[in-house]
Image 1 (cartoon, helix red, strand yellow):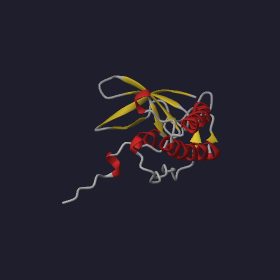
Image 2 (cartoon, rainbow, N blue to C red; image 1 turned 90 degrees about the horizontal axis):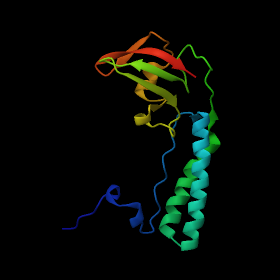
Image 3 (tube, rainbow, N blue to C red; image 1 turned 180 degrees about the vertical axis):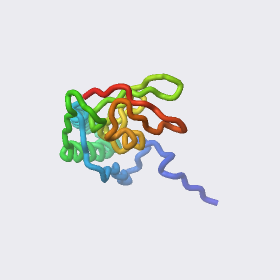
Image 4 (spheres, rainbow, N blue to C red; image 1 turned 60 degrees about the horizontal axis):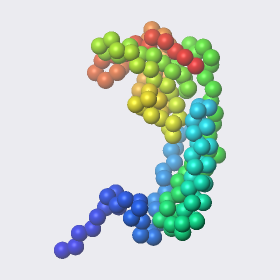
Length: 158
């Protein structure tokens, strides 16, 4: 009996010459904050540096991975649409940071950002996430569903 291993369980460093699958590009508009645009530019520069090192080392596996990632981040950079929030927003929109009072009284801030910039642990949530959709258009004092409970918007910052 022959067993085959799913590609999901193979490290990229185990690249055997087969083409790597392309990174999926979102169907949503590529909205970015100023920070997100800076991060995209930095990532492209990092990958270009890595590509030079991989070429010098003749590392074909690394070159394949880097080429794929460069295609992705260059496409994301080219399609990026910079959105600047209002300085003193009245409603949650892209780029706005909302301070919420969560169930139990804890406070937590969330900022709506682009998909590539999202980092939920840091309070940066993709504008297409369920929480972002629940926040969108709401103002100070409004409540929104938060898990099985609700949260109240305490403040907004652009």
